[in-house]
Length: 500
Image (cartoon, rainbow, N blue to C red; front, side):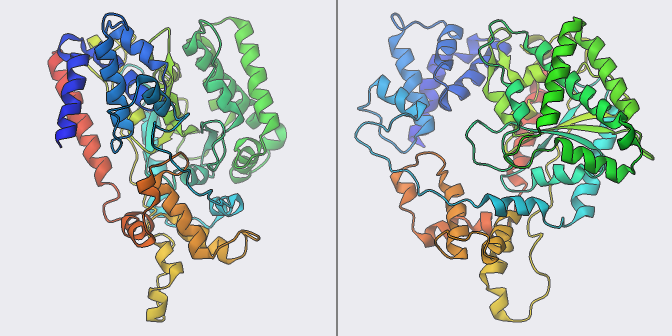
């Protein structure tokens, strides 16, 4: 506790929050978080916002670097490290001086098993899909530009809790335009979508990012309307139309949807050439989409834009506007008219993109006080834990079997264990228990990156004890999210009270 208290005091002496406006506080906090996560270029922006120079404020700059190193590596002694060594450690390019870290064992992921999990028979449709679809339909009907910030909500849940699988299931009921924004080189499933490149247009000087995102959204909408307007598609049943769209656009493996991607890019170029304002071409594109998708019954929701791994948009800052890419993307979304059946959902494992608003008069991402400021409630109660636990028991041995134990908690581990047992991972050493446990341990110690020696030396019983909430019953799956939602809402209410 003493170290944490010292850390907070030193950081407060540099940030001097009481001297900053609420808008600048938000900017500094955002860049500080990105800097601690390894984006070294954010240090230059921090120094500019805090009016620090290396020559005159060397001690304060050094304090920022040491505090960032403490946030990232709280268990390490950095007292003898130089600034360059700490920056290198933050960047992840080298280990800290005098401490050689060993990489975690390479986990043998069998992507075939993971993909089979996406195709497994869906459980608890009435408890997961039906209420989620009802909420999205209600939200789509409530969208008004003078009331809400933008037509989207957040689908939040722990890793491997079934967020992407839920989106895939929703695609059987509405048109889902799915885009996964995983980082380049990620081994996660589903893989990064080809269209993700257009969400991170790096290297383009003085790019109007809001207009760029508006072009992209309109291009996706136009591609949807063209697809559903085809005579061969219109002649099919609703179920077959949605299935055809899924096969055409929903990338679930390393094979890109070449025709779909090419058509979106062609539409982007065509819209750019017309030179219209975003509200004009986005409104026209949304209208065509709405007219092309003919649904019977509840038509409040016709098309769902699903952005998976959306937290990565919060890691990039638009240099012109000084706000995260996600805030710019939200601006573009706000240009889509109401009552046309459009709504968006973004997924993440944390509340980063929930983005509870600061005081309106000091919000650097705010455009016009006459526009809406409300946010749609996040969706986070995905009742996926224990969905594959067998109901009936024939013996005590079955109660204690590895297959049943792995079926508790996250649905991933039970499905993966069964996949190994079926022999899908031919040629991969180790038993089914060992292979599945390795993945669980890797998640525990974050072994996709270098981890501390202490973490890698955890014994199997220690890992199993800590993993109790991961591979066994999750008693309080939503408690941390509930707490953070309440805390964020309280802070938001206080900010609004201060602005009155």
